[in-house]
Image (cartoon, rainbow over all chains, first blue to last red; front, top):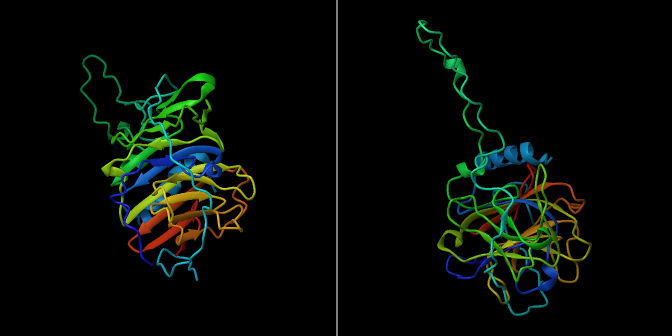
Length: 59
Length: 248
């Protein structure tokens, strides 16, 4: 694997669709978007799961 | 090969994203009608109870009342270290004509707001959960900023209910180069896989040759789910709700 460094891309982020490929539009409902500049550990991820379960009833 | 833990393994390769057009995004949509503001319950869905300290009668000495102290605030994504973007359907949603969302205010405090492109935003839903509804022809963008250039470690989480039609795919979140191999993080429903999309799945990629697809399928049944993509160094992982992670 040659992981790509995204730190200097200088492009806008997109939500719900892709700026270049028209067929990449999301169909559905979006409740929340969370972006974190760190790799969450399992314990922290579990907190997010608990939060989302409580708010949205995910299972 | 894939494992069932965030301890990661090797990489798959696959071609995707056949058609590429010019990016013409206009991120200058104007905010008009906020559905809700950041001041309302930005820290979570449960507000601390007001103080229950008893009122003292005249002449009665004050009473220590530790039991009356308000409970600690509920945990929320605001508590995440390195939080860079936090968009919530019930906060900071500005709408224009026909309830179409023009701007979606970032709750992280870093100003990474999402803006509708060319005025074609999703439709806001007013209700208990207040999702934004996308029909496949809408998109929002977040202006490039240092706080969302994540490099080799990041986590993207999207709570959504997918109604993605079979054999199409939808971008939930991404920040990629405009040309193949589309370097940068991206999270898709019905993850594309060339002529054989992973229908009903969710996938995350760093580029078209480095990706991971959920073990779960039938994720397009419109049930709310949490989709998470995590990169830690050279490895990427994907999880659905609290399920076992899948890595690549």
